[in-house]
Amino acid sequence: MSSGTLITVAPTGAESSKADVPALPVTLDELVATAVACEAEGASVIHVHIRDHAFEPTLDLGLLRETVAALRDKTDLIVQLSSGGSVHDPEESRLAVLEAGPDMASCTMGTVNFGDDVFLNRWEFIVDLHTRMQERGIVPEYEIFDLGHLWALERLLDKYGLPAGGHVHVDFVMGVPGGMPGTTSAFVACLTAVAALPPGATFSATGIGRASLPVLLTSLGAGGHLRVGMEDTITYGKGKPVESNSQLVARAAAFARLAQRPPLSTAQARDLLVIKG
Ligand code: KMH
Ligand code: ZN
Image 1 (spheres, rainbow, N blue to C red):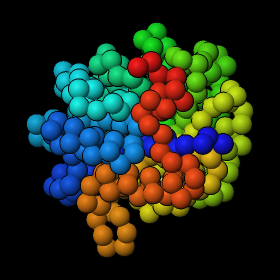
Image 2 (image 1 turned 135 degrees about the vertical axis):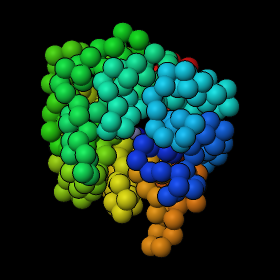
Image 3 (image 1 turned 180 degrees about the vertical axis):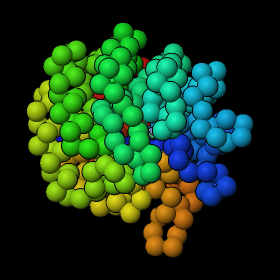
Image 4 (image 1 turned 60 degrees about the vertical axis):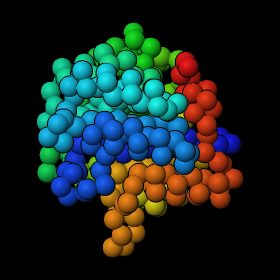
């Protein structure tokens, strides 16, 4: 079991609107301020979705480059760009995200129903994303929305080799309507499949909405890492909207300290994920 906890913050996502969730960081200034605050509370990785000038999700390459540069300038966080985008983004735009030169990018390991939509991730697309990341030295975080996605990852690594750096890190995204639920039994099933991945593979987990706390506690207990943030959770407790992403990071960090596995620093996180400085 890792002696510390990697905390990833996913501050924005592509699903909530600024009108519905005024605390959502949608401008570059808001994102950078959020990143600084979350790093101070114990986050070491930031999973980034950006918005355009109308606050709608975008994969605009110029804006992504500007975002990566600003986050590097103001924080030491590991910058992980979303290659998932929104359910409406075309594959070419999702692949082009890599040209913004992040430390990491997400790589979802299969198609999943996503509320009333479909989050499409064809096998050939996954292979393309994985191999382009290998070529560019970008470290993937493999996003797992359903149990079969872990077995798809095992097949991917077997056929196309290890990711850049050689370390395998996965993130269980639990509780999406259409994906696996945020239950202990689903978590245990994922752990069984992780055992089939290369030795040393690590996992983090996030629960969507009300699955947030149960998944956080289960992951800590199982020796896993944590992802929190307003991409996944906009309610702090019954009747209490989340005030800020740093509020969620602070709560995760407090639980991690209670579990005697305090938050990893950004340098320790780089070591764990084998990301060059
Ligand atoms: N917005 C979801 C459709 C990722 O960032 O890689 C996909 C998502 C996963 O959030
Ligand atoms: Zn995302």
